[in-house]
Image (spheres, rainbow, N blue to C red):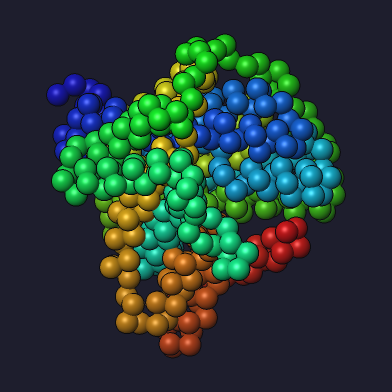
Length: 437
């Protein structure tokens, strides 16, 4: 047994290099869209899109490799969706805060993040979450990413009369999603190894053949310069001198904290890592993503966090840090092969998200639905995530309700003290979002 095999516990995890690398590639394909979405969102705030593209790739790579080497988990990181929109549209455009100052806010939040990780406060909070609510978080993330997939693929769209509705089947790209969903579902049911990845490849090929996906103009492009954004946040720390900006920093901190914590727990549940309601090596996992967030703020991007799309790699068998390291290496390579990544459209990744949503929703069976004091907060978490389009908002709804229902059931003494603290934290969190929303 080689030292690498032993370190990553490949034999104990019943996996091998081939499966881990395939899983890493699958995870990368599932989340490669962030390389293009993040520059678009932050570009709306006036940031240089080319610099943000490179910063996104490097920050993602740093987080993935740290997660793989230190925590040995198949969990990938990248600038988080949602918080990047808050950065651009709420802080910069809405509050008229210069993007340089907003980036300084991310830097300060990441420093605080790193400190509470080192002192194991994050670890204590995650361990304090009841088992039922952890299963609810896992299931809720499943519904959330399935909803993302359905929306990205054009099967579910906004509807003024009914909020959401069935998308138009006269749109060619929507049929790519339908094809990918059917093919992937068949392969999954037949237990074909690498079913999700094969489904993506076949969907991409169909898109190219039918002209629905354009062939890239070239295969290789030089990496855009980081100069417009590198170190800008650090140089503008002094700009954070008002209560409003302190609230912005706190919001960056809270949203990233609970999005990442919820995602880590959900993915650990899916992969079967949880032991006695605890996630082994969670401290190293949290240290990895908080360090990546700090690096990202220096490079020039919004907060970095664990990605739910890691579930695609886990679903094809990824169980060790080699999966995350592979994803990280591909992010670095992605800087130079950016034109090729345009082939992987949202319609290609949508079926993978939907199928993985099905897999993660299986945690619903482990929730104590017959006990209303558990069922009500769990239900709010599960349904809240897709309906609010936010993992952290869903968690907030459930965590606020949990102490209330437990006290009503005369089980208040069973609630961990930290859950009472989180009750007040989330009440404040919701107020902050309301004030700044």
